[in-house]
Image 1 (cartoon, rainbow, N blue to C red):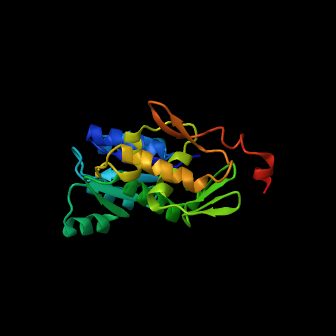
Image 2 (tube, rainbow, N blue to C red; image 1 turned 45 degrees about the vertical axis):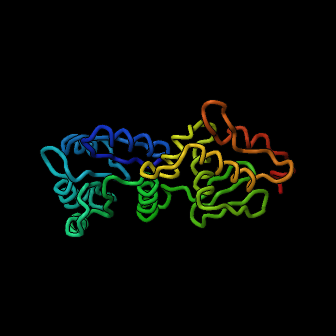
Image 3 (cartoon, helix red, strand yellow; image 1 turned 30 degrees about the horizontal axis):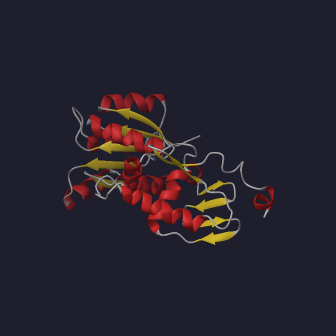
Length: 240
């Protein structure tokens, strides 16, 4: 079962952004705009992690964090505070109240996803899959090692993130804009054609000789990791 993340955020645009990107990471997402809604969500099902906005209507995020840490059933749930307050004193206050991590708005989506994965690994390693394997291609998230047909594939950091992003959801087509947001982050400006350049580098690194290409170009739409890749692998290659 995928890990469940409770997002407590009253800004609609940010809540939509978080839901979209976290679901793309494979998480189940529950959202709440107020402390009361968050409490009802907790009573229905305890999440595996909470993203908690500091500034909420009625009850502040830091007060909710304090209450949840005081209750046995919620005391061990990892909590990441989201806030526009970047001063050291405020960060210390949030962590002292019981938050496990602290992310300042505007935030990088890839960095936030990495922090979520790191917290979940510490809290419950079974919730985060360390390795992605499709056909003869394997990506190890722990060591950042990629292998194909028992050989090491050497990728740059951007090509590695691209491959990981695509492998998480075989068959799903991502536009260049979505790949830029998911891999580079929405706070970094680069031209959409940069995606094409790095896809080309990724293909040259993982494909050798007559090996089938797992990256599918969808004309007018973007790129996808081919969901038929494993089935199209030659028997001899899969058995090596």
